[in-house]
Image 1: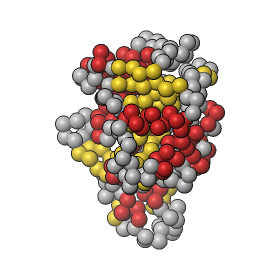
Image 2: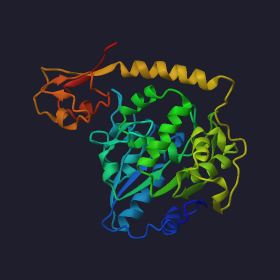
Image 3: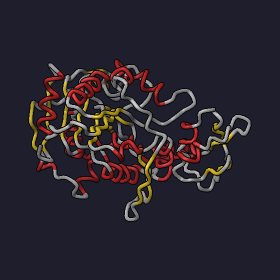
Image 4: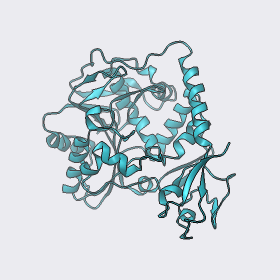
Length: 349
């Protein structure tokens, strides 16, 4: 598949479509390959809400890969909270059943990557993402208040352990800076194949549409550009696309469309009134600062000195029940891995 070719496939038979998709992408030798499937698992949501990847798409992709002899893992990194674990969210979204026993919580172990020349000098990505042979991204065709739409580039933000996302947001509250960081994160592990779920979708006003399409390609910028056009908006309204074009990461003139292109009439994206970006940035910065005031606290009565928290801590700031808060990056991996629920979060302003 040429880098800038984007395919639009009307869904009649998903299995038949996947054969065409994988053949077109050149991913034909999958036996014994470690394949990671990364859907969009924003929050606990029913499939009919149309805000997360359709579990039917995940199920068919997993079945296809298993038949091809691949070693398949499915996972994502939602922001953790007290009410729901990753597995709880996955079950609510229908992903556990769709993954056929191959869904994995990937927020516990991470790999540190240093890039001194980048805006984000140091970043942690989930170890399962770093170690896979093939990465398949399954974004949802969806609007987003901050970035206008969340598609292939934004979906890669999910390779970051969930607890680190608010930290990155707080460091880069300006939309332009955050968009540059999204481009850097995408570049760390570009997917080998992107399949955008545009089967049943919802717009910024909550109205539902059923285009019944999969949009796929191997270059996230090109895929996002065509998705923006299908949504009926100027692609430059999506900050990551505007920056990517200005940085020469892709040229819209090089994009070739295969399939039936059709604009979704009446599809609404978030309204951008004057100073909206500044207001969103200011509010987001306050909220993220509040989030980051939550720090892990070890309960000595419940702790059994298993030291799993020490092993998992990417910043290596935990030693013998003591947390060095000057080094703590608020990833909350220690909370995820503790078998005794001996680590809780408390607000420390």
